[in-house]
Image (cartoon, rainbow, N blue to C red):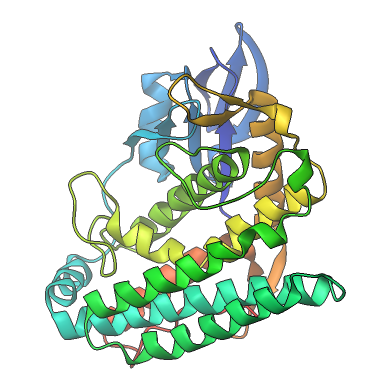
Amino acid sequence: MKRHLNTLFVSTQGAFLAKDGAAVDVRIERESRLRVPLLNLGGIVCFGRISASPALMAGCAEAGVPVTYLTEHGRFLARVSGFTPGNVLLRREQYRRADDPTAAAAITSSIVAAKLANCRTVLLRAVRDSPGAAWRGVVEAAAARLARNVLQSRKGSTVDVIRGIEGDGASTYFSVFNHLVMAQADGFGFTKRSRRPPLDPMNALLSFLYAMLAHDARAACEAAGLDSAVGFLHRDRPGRPGLALDMMEEFRPLLADRIALSLVNRRQVAADGFQRLESGGVVMSDATRRVVLTTYQERKQEIITHPFIGEKTTIGLLVHVQARLLARYLRGDMDAYPAFIWK
């Protein structure tokens, strides 16, 4: 846990990934552009028309470096990885807890309470940073309602009840999200959350960051020996990494929403970096995607003190810490799962 698990993002169409000794060699038009040791990687993510040699994929599988293939716009296609690490007894306990309504509700309540608390922190920081804003009262009222949702979620007796509280909290949060966007006149107005497809640039930005976060959460679950497909909050569905989606909920406000707001409000991205498809969906350009990925990686390298273990770590490793804390809880080493609450 001492080293930062970095992710190599490859988005240049036509790029080829080859194995060069114990390193990944990124080649474009047969010319080597980047060489990265496998030892320094936690994963490789390929966007669109990217190919890799069999030798590289075998080397990545052996080194525990998953290779994920996405469309150009961030939709998951496939993932190449080696054997699932970890203790089978841990995974069997995970399955038992997932099938036990009371045990599942206990884990779900911690995750949802943390997510809503972190959403509330985003709103309160916006209020603090804009003391004279006309919308201050509306956002403060939403933050107060989220505080009530946090208390309700901690007392939720069933997973379905907790899901309902989470839905109400998310609705409250996104109902005032537009007030946090300072560049509305520049084409980043936000009315409501839309996905599959996102219908405006702000939603496209959020969806893309959520896809990156889901990738990291899945890697964290599998590195901890957990089954990323079996969650507690998210129902089982073929092809869906339920536990990874559970784990990422705590980090949406910190690692996605805040980055999206920062990129837009600091004008690091522009509305002309997005285009509308015939289907009505909105996607980002290659140049905009590179800016977003660079910012995401830089954010992951920032240092933070974990509120539960009291140790300093990078933001990018937080989800790995949480996956290991969940594993400790499932093994019976802890009385409850300590979800991450941002302060």
